[in-house]
Image (cartoon, rainbow, N blue to C red; front, side, top):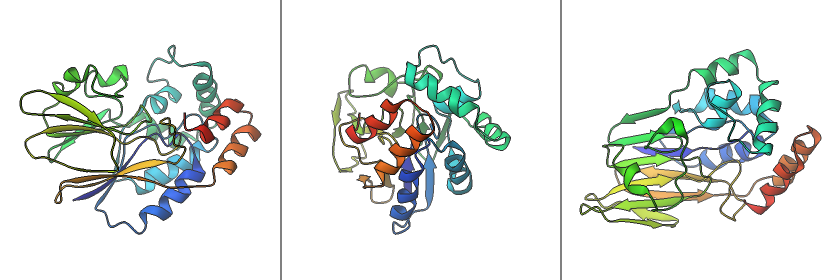
Length: 242
């Protein structure tokens, strides 16, 4: 199976439009969305519409649940809170129903899928590197886990002896004796210093994971954020990749 995996689109329609073009030339069997379709950006409804139509399955992210009142937002910073309120007022009834229906996680065919972390998925923990990773690996049984949420691509590898290391690489060969957590980065608001959107191509037959990035009309996404009265910082950060 060949999976295209993405998350943290955050209402960035310009990135999504280019993503659609990018993946049109990549043979794949399933398209997987690991959540946070909305938040921060100016086009929540078109982004949800596209995901509803095209993704083979979609999980809930904290921003998805926040806009429909299914998770606490007291820990959100000012910008996230403002975007949440703005988005909540604009979602169609159909798209609200869709977000409310999303599952937290999924496990199938040796893969565990979750938005934030295997450990306490509803607490929305971040996975940046190997620190504290033991509790994440002990919280799922599959050989491989895919997550998003942090907006930073990373590979965590656990050996049979329990040693855990973290890596950043464009492509990774999976060792069958090891277990893995792959963070796909972000399609709509990267935070690893690279403003280009990121997604993963996972080939289960070839046992490879490839991190892919692309350029898009970033300035248009920024202009729409400002024109819609969202905090200007949300536009500025797109060009900084943070």
